[in-house]
Length: 495
Image 1 (cartoon, rainbow, N blue to C red):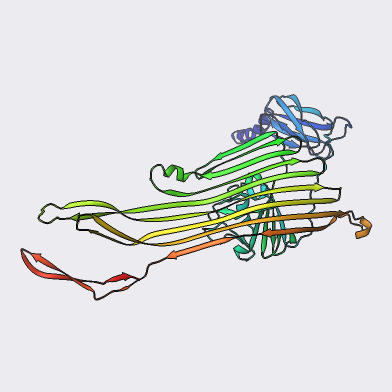
Image 2: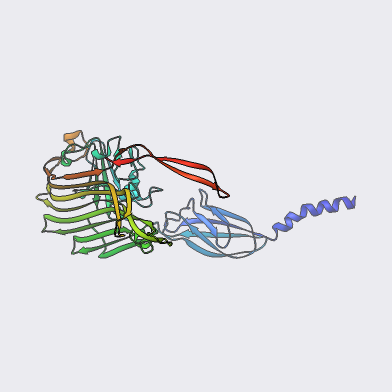
């Protein structure tokens, strides 16, 4: 019986012995000004993972704490700084702690102001910074548009968009009130406007005001920043495809100048190793100058351009062998043959003068005089037939017949635009107790386009010129003719 009760007694006493080797912390957290208990304060024993939250009476507990000296930290979202205190825990005892938090953190009043969008049919207003954060667009604001519903790129050759099913050629693109040729390099590879200068983009899908003219299904209106905060700043980026830079500087209190540019450089690298070849490249730039003219007028000058270009040439070589009369040795000469080439250049450039006038607090005028120039040049040429023969003097006579296809399009656009807006101050009683704003708008739009285009092509056609020529080649084995190969070659002549 004695042997049975001794192990049982040891089992019952072991937890008590363990508890006697640890201590307990019990405390209350109060407000330092009102002495009221603080609810939901977080109490943390620094250097450990032990954390507790105070209850409705501001109390907290820690049990089975190893004896020693600790630092406790008390934090709360309504108090500016945490409170820390040192405590000592002894084995088998409960340490009582009373803690106080400092003054409540009172934030200053913050007023958030925003622009109320005027009621417009089918208009979407998107900030450039929002588009750059879209996954998969590579910090390209315009490329982010293609992730929106009903907007996409039709092909991989021309940087234009289709919006809500409209034909790509039916859309209009504007950058700072100036016509933009096309929004993307090489059919969607990269936008033609640097994302660093874009402030917001307005999309009019299926409905827009008279300030954009007629004969279009949708309008993409891009706006650059109206001001800069720092005196001078810049950015530079270099990657495997292109390099880009941006530099801007303030001029006085409200004026500024900004320039951004990009260029791919694969053609510059590969071109060092392969002579006579112009590999595809693209480039663009945006320049803006703004300065106030007194208190009521603000002048803006802008210029931008983009280019996509490649030029590839290939020249054939021909070996001609001549055996003179009475000669045993053959003489082989290498001559330059026909040349095939492919040339493509697509781009635009634009300039604008803009004057904003605030005649009164409610009456505003925006005048713009712009010029844009779009161009496209395509030139393909390839040899169709080549013939070589020696004349009686031993000189080589060669003839090469070429086929080609050329396109040359030039579209200058000159635009004068005046927008006049008068803001109406409506009282809440006039509109059912709601505070709102409205404006009367009118304007003038004149546009002149002396465009011209040229297309020329020559694709040779051939027709049969007689009976086929029979060529017989004997097959010789062991000095004997055992067969023959008969080849019939059709005769063709250029029409």
